[in-house]
Length: 422
Image 1 (cartoon, rainbow, N blue to C red):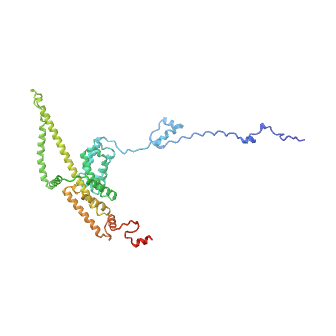
Image 2 (cartoon, rainbow, N blue to C red):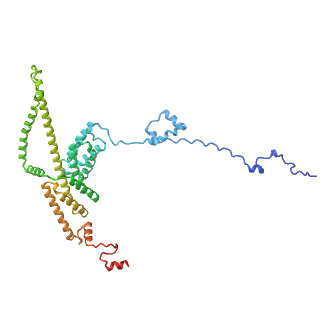
Image 3 (spheres, one colour):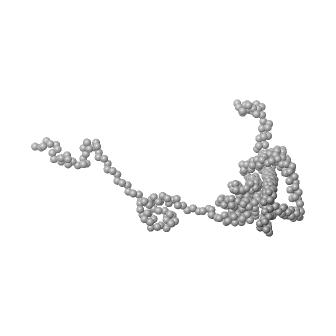
């Protein structure tokens, strides 16, 4: 008779395999095992360029073989090959270089190369208080002929040199600053008037107008000094040589007079002591002579300052008049005409700030420009149109126009405007 037990012949529950799960086991699965640790990354290979720079030492080989070699490799990209653009030169070498540049920069054919060397000295910071006098000598040699800076072959080089030299003007004394301002008018502002850029041209014209407005009104003494300078320039060389020969004895007599005041201190006396004790009685005379000498020196300094101010003012007027003449020669270019018209009118309105000969030149120039204005407005050009610029065209157009409060309707209220508006 068969057994009624359904589980007969089956293994006991404790011996059940782990894969055969029950309902309770399926509800709560066992936790997953922890992940295995990731393997350590391999060290990065060293750069070939870094190995070529320095010879590796045994200690370096040991560090590269260890896993901690990745830390110093982060600094390898910072070791870059750098080229030196400046040379550390002593002050004596810089002075010798400046003297050599000054000897060649006055030659127009060598100016381009010499000016580039001077620019390198400025960029390298070699222009210092100890070398500023030699650098000023370079600029002085370059401007030995003020008209040379406006020649087309060297115009751009002059502009670069004196534009860069404006960064070291704080090292100049007052006399050097005054002279440098005159050179800037010749080499920078005047050369800007040759440009093809209307913005640069207008900016240069504005600087010249401001400089003219800052000039003092010319006096009778200025006119007399100008007449005397023109008379001296018209004399022959022989007369000039005779004047220099006559001035030499006068200078010698003045030097003798100055030396006589302290001849007792400069020349050793036969007796080195005062046997009679009379030096004490002469102290007040010595003090009087010292005070008189100080007053004479102060008077000479004041006179020298006045002469320097006159020379600076004369040179400034000549440079501004030169700029006005350069601008007037460019009047044939249409886009320059409006700026030159305003510029020439400003100079004509301030003509009293110039000397007699300069006033005559400005009046002639203004009359010439006015004549060309009239010719442009009345004459015909090659194209058959009125030779006027845009400003004059609009000025002529709107001078006869009737302005209406109704924006789009003409002032006359003609029928065409009404029909156009519908």
